[in-house]
Amino acid sequence: MGFAQQQRPNIVFILADDLGWMDVGYNGSEYYETPNLDALSKKGVVFNRAYAAAPVCAPTRGSIMSGKYPATSGYTGLPGQVGRPAKGKLVDAPSLPALPLDEIALSRVLRDNGYSTWHVGKWHVGEGAGHSPVNYGFEKEITGYEGAKWVGKRFRQNDNMFITDHLTDTAMYLIENRDDKPFFLNLWYYAVHTPIKAKAADIAYFEEKAKRMGLDTINPFVEGENYPANPWFDKDRMNKRISRRKIQSNPVYAAFVYCLDYNVGRLVAKLEEENLMENTIFIFFSDNGGLSSAEGSPTCNAPLREGKGWMYEGGFREPCIFYWKDKIGSGVINQPVVSTDFYPTILDLAGLEQLPNQHTDGVSIKPLLTGQDTFSRGPIFWHSPHYFNNGGYPFSAITDGDWKYMFNYHSGKAELYNLMVDPSERKNLIDSRLDKAMEMEKELNNWLETLNPKFPEPNTDSKQ
Image (cartoon, rainbow, N blue to C red; front, side):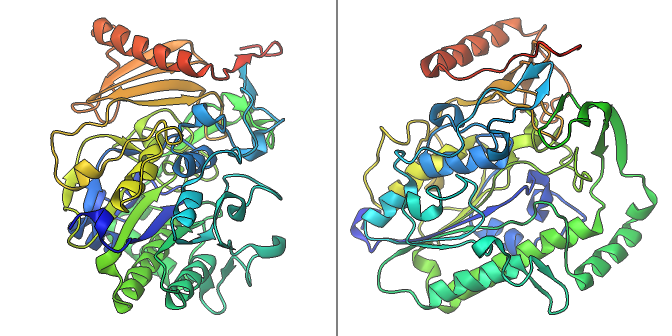
């Protein structure tokens, strides 16, 4: 019996915030501990090259809900940048303040096809009245930050309750009190975004572990160049130097990651207790790379280059797991996929019709989940015309197979890497493989021409 003839599957989509590709044990972290995600990785499908559609959170979240690249929808930047562009050698391009309401959001499609739709946690697809989850098709919206106040407090040490635990409790309550309809649980944690805080006992454990590993004796930071632009909240940023973390050694961040993983485990246990795992599509992802070059630089994405806000792999390669017991395969897939693909893939797995006029930039990756190794989703594109406060530059990029081509609007220079042999992006092949660079440049420019997107403009006040 095919998926369409079965009872519609439940869908659980967990999105972490700022969790880097290297922040999980199954990708090789030796200091952080993620036993529950590691267990899921052994049972489910792991995408080794799963990309966020942007190197920061808001546009990636919009891409998940719309199935469109940020440049297609116009929601390319952070809400805080609207009307307050970052300024360096260039001035940020304008961005919409929210994902347009005329986009047929994934949640709306699922609701209209008989699903209970619940959003729990951080949203950031739009701010303010008129752009909350309920405006995009969610029937229930519990952010943990109701009435401009955190439930209790965001981090409450006295009773060992953090907002991460509260959101999981809320999700478990919704599952326990469900009706007979299939449900779409969109559980988007605030963890592990700043402020970096964790439970005292967990911090003590990772402090001791750092000592055992000798990490506490190593200076984790390397001072680099000045930040290239001033964001709206720090007009002196360009006079400050980027401090990059070179090793994973922050015990508070490690404890924060551990708390996130613990709550993923709690939710999986609840689904198993309710006998739901056999008919639940379970997806885990993150919205952008780990924060490694600003705001205390709490993590390191090595061997990937840079992190949140940057055009390199550390900026938008994410941990990604799909699990559906006995319905999809297991193992590691090295083919690149991107956050726009969730929309058509979920529809496909649920036996619902595709909406190609909506998820224009997404491709159903069901063939990869079901073992069709000959499938390829084709090239993936980025257009991020903004400086972010992490040190990154406005850029456009394309990856196709093993290759990645990028154009940096700040420097006016292009870069080309073969990710198969150089995942750390250390050897720029722009000169030695000019033929490949020109081929990918043409493909990128052709894509941009179809969109007529916004570009950063020269800063007439800049002395750079």
